Figure 1 (cartoon, protein in one colour):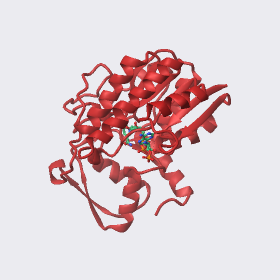
Figure 2: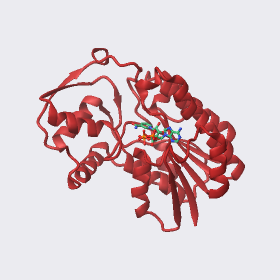
Figure 3: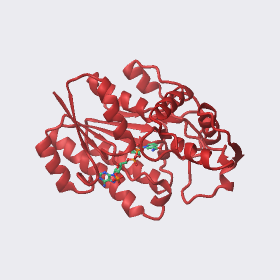
Figure 4: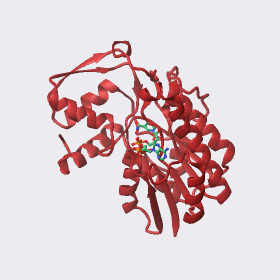
Length: 291
Ligand SMILES: NC(=O)c1ccc[n+]([C@@H]2O[C@H](COP(=O)([O-])OP(=O)(O)OC[C@H]3O[C@@H](n4cnc5c(N)ncnc54)[C@H](OP(=O)(O)O)[C@@H]3O)[C@@H](O)[C@H]2O)c1
């Protein structure tokens, strides 16, 4: 039996992993720990968890993910995104546990005009991007057996995300303004969850950093328009520039990820973002989750 610890166990991605795990091989046993059950900033608690759990893998879904709030709470963001990652890396290394850590397109400054590869120099945009980048570095230096998977624009029926916000606001308002000059790729968190489990299932040993998002390219404006079109919501969407919608944290203007490395590693084709959005919307509607 392969024993897998999932930290941040009640978050969006962890919830998708729990669902995706039902479709994967049977010899995996998952232990999900919420932030209350396992605070990754507490080294003693992490050590105790690994001591009793005897895990083969740890999937770190725990993070301080509020990009704007991080600007005024840098020490909280640092504690979770850097020190928490370091704690998991140190203990994983000690216990010979393979650490799968999730990172973000915010480790890039957004100045590229072609998709970012794993070889591109990261920068760490704002407090969130910087603490996530420092977390990656802690992991790479402390734990040989690691996978760092950078992803972008996660959404699903779980947690807080852009798709759910649009479904809510689209019903409440007649008109919305959405930025069109930030370009990236939406990623259905269930697609990412499947890929993480495939990595485990295939017993891959090529450790290192990988990029994963859905295929294709969109602006937030395009993403919003697609959400409304697919869900048959009538609302007027006004495209605006980033400087017309000031926010505390800077966001990358271009953060499309090159996924060649993970596609070659796993021999997979990645779903196009609109097709995944269609699947996600069907699930949402089937469960009567549209508010
Ligand atoms: N969401 C995106 O658009 C996006 C894009 C790119 C990359 N990512 C990365 O993907 C990963 C998963 O994101 P997500 O969307 O699933 O985020 P999420 O829904 O916000 O989940 C994060 C989880 O981490 C937990 N957490 C926070 N502090 C913790 C601590 N000290 N110890 C243990 N758990 C703690 C949170 O618990 P509480 O709720 O109890 O605080 C929450 O359950 C993160 O690494 C994130 O940086 C996300």
